[in-house]
Length: 336
Image 1 (cartoon, rainbow, N blue to C red):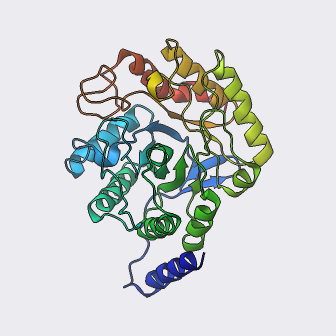
Image 2 (cartoon, rainbow, N blue to C red):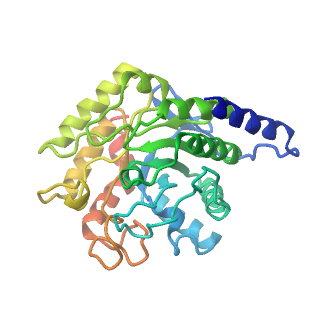
């Protein structure tokens, strides 16, 4: 903890003594009660899993290309991209593998990856979109690709400090884990009290500890998705969390189509499973991030678009769900 205190103090001093670089004007994501706002207006948070975004060659070709893809996402009703800093697991996911991470082993940041994070935040901001940046992933942890506690503290401090100008960004501490999530939350808030911070505490159906849920700015669990009627169970889970904690709740990965190798269902699924699940999350007062199977296998598989970007026009299955998301206002007006 002494090392962490020193890191935080150094970061604060750096922020206070740096040449005058005012916080950049732009879109500001906040929470108000159980809802999200963007620039104080209601914000209908609708996300998509785009875990490989920082490492995809086509998406990062240049600024115009990236902005064009962000506009395509927005045209599908998606205004939040859930992006991972650690994409270095050994599972064979598209664009993944060794060194596909924001972090050096000591927790310092790789300049070239950090530049992509900033560019993504800036270009999303220009399109009125939000970036949900996932700092650490359980997938890497389970492959024994881990930062020690001191390196983890340094990484949190450096990311928080670097992202301070970008107010359209949310920091999510883990995907599906809670190791030191509370300490990380406290570090982020010590440096940037207005930053929205959340955590995905565990696998599907793990809804988080009471201590963590009371602390986070909003909740982002993975609801139940393997039961035959998961769309009904998830609705009850979301409603219960909103009632108990009085803050926004996002279903981080509703339903599932992905390969059984990595937690996907053993039985066939249907686009309607996703649609019912997401609609019931909305009906319960929550928000959703569309979770698909477009990155769980390597290039050349039936599940992966040739460019590795999870958009429409590649899979009839996913196009059904995208069509639903694109028309979300038609359905939301009856339940919001």
